[in-house]
Image (tube, rainbow, N blue to C red):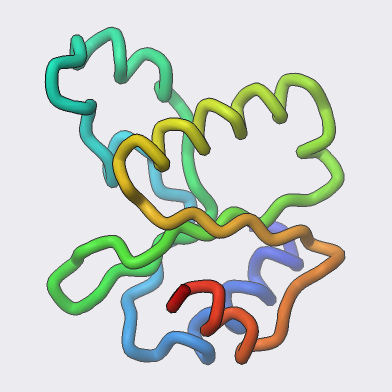
Length: 116
């Protein structure tokens, strides 16, 4: 993890003590293929994609996925990966929050984003 990611991790721990926080989680570990989809084909689309942070409650139900985006996310290959990730999370009904490293919100704003 970069220094910014470590610092943000600590901020998330303080902002969300009621949740468990996981980092660098493979997307295939938190979502399943939509019903009626070919599982292998679907998994190939998200193969090797991971998310930065996952908040889960005490029942281990995903509350939110948080992506911390730096300047590298403006590169075409990263944009394409982000779009695949966004689409898969949306299809699975998982709440995704994208935060730019140059615009990290306060804990109060983080709470509002997660509890939308």
